[in-house]
Length: 264
Ligand code: SF4
Image (cartoon, rainbow, N blue to C red):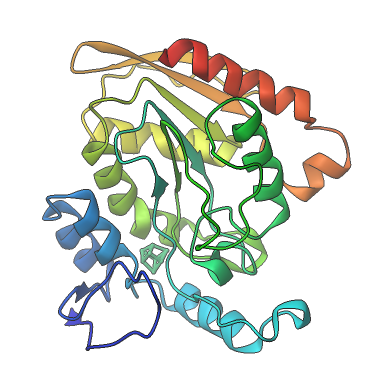
């Protein structure tokens, strides 16, 4: 473990000087478990270096950049959960995009999946604006929070089994720290559906024995502190899914409208 030196140079950096930096999966477990607040876990995960392959990739992408963003300074670090600190609806994705969240520092911000997601969240009353382009754009989530199961952009959008396991404690800790008001968890894609079950169990949710199969519109009822919580499956608004029509605006809106009904 090491500590952040003074001055990252990034405005609104959640990690100040002295924030401990995880270098191994053991460090992640220890730092996630000892994070007492959302601000603390956000700061700590935002400087994590526990997965060498992902650290190298996220920083290389930030150095080389895409031509369209050549004049921008990329975030190039883990992308923390973002949104309402007392959410009724939690939205779980897989990982940040190399030139989206890894560039802007905010999850689903500045990429095509995010364009679809935020437009739907706006239409269904969970976002203040229809677009999410950069961290200072004034966008706000209303009663919702978005988190990624893996905090760093992976090559080909595919984190390894070890990398998923290494990042698990950050997810579980964040789920725990926001759990009280959460009534709906929306999983974007089959991987998020799989990843969130053990994280919910670790965070103290009561789950049925078997995990129902993932599907668009799939629902499962779980509980937290005796209160019902609904898990909703939603196809990921990836370019592949939206280009091919596997996911449409109406399909996304139907899931988030349902999330609104169940969390009202
Ligand atoms: S994927 Fe998670 S555990 Fe691995 S370096 Fe990024 S934040 Fe740390």
